[in-house]
Image 1: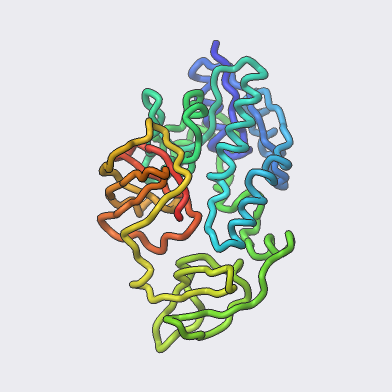
Image 2 (image 1 turned 180 degrees about the vertical axis):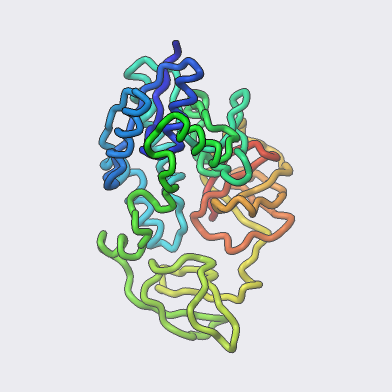
Length: 332
């Protein structure tokens, strides 16, 4: 019987992933990575007990701070829009699961992500719940030992399986927040850490048109609260050097050309331009076809067939060939 170390979060997805693995004949061991979220460990233990699943709790708070929280805070204050989950997956979650797998002699690790693995390649899950984008920074070595039991399933079916199995968290709502900012208040979290900037200017086409309370309260693409000559304005650029927000009209937020750094390839790195599609945020509806051109310095130049709305420095950019995820990097 092959042994699997499953990332067990206390949510319905990882619980049903465990259920499916056990039904598939695997010897499943759950690992709960404690990042300090109130109530999460209790839910994980309840779900594990209902499945008779061995569960180990590992303190991941220090690793999260070093690999995720600190870089996220630093990036935000540089005017970047980093996705903390894509920092966490390779450096904390998958690394710690693999370390535990090696210690216990397990060949596999598993998570409850909605994405498909076929012959070592990673593909999108069902359109309504696809989470392949969240795996764009996972390394090839990590991917080679990964199982994704939920694959292309839809969420209602997952909840149905949980209810049939008597799992007590079958109807637990999906978490929409970053685990270390459960109230979703980025600005307050950054201010508690110290070093948050103060008020500054809002500029539209070279003219100062107002003030903001601090750049850490804003992200690229966010709507400004005041009208300018009866038009809505949006944040087009964050300039930390001058503590300035540069504003634009809605139609000026769209771009067809972006550059990507620190590309993590899940295939052998291409040397020639190729056609594909790209996703520059977690939303699943915006995945335009594009031409990808690798550069000698390792960066990519991407030209999309239809514009991307408000691409922001630091965002993760995932590159696909059809539904297959080829890898991901960070927008320059």
